[in-house]
Length: 211
Image (cartoon, rainbow, N blue to C red):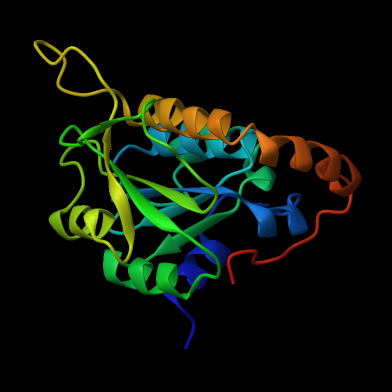
């Protein structure tokens, strides 16, 4: 039976998603996970950041918008062919998918309740950076998995003045976390991808690199 993720990728996501990146995505060092994002503009901006940093993007339903929303497409501009997006029907379905992936990996929760500061934390290849929705943050089960010894690596926070600001914008938070992790990994994925994408730019290879 065809999965929700496969149906969503074929029928709803912006045209050309992930086509150019091809084999490059097999070696991704990091992944970004959005749990029930609510604002299409934020998700589109995050997709653009993922394209710029050679990172895969996972969206976990329920979403606060249709994945073919015009605002989502507009925020991502014409960079959709350079980012691979996979939609998961629930946290449980995503967790099962995560467990099936090869190599060393761990889930890292980004939350105001995190104990480690994002720039003090030591990232490594195979980290999946997990963010909650703009309105309610991370669900309890996701936070537990990120803190568990089997799946997670802990809960991380980005420091800020909380006296009059409730939280940072989601797309800003992802950018801060993702580029700190990339910096610690010496931007290795960016260097490899830049060379390979030049060769693949005109070929538009279509491939489910998450399979």
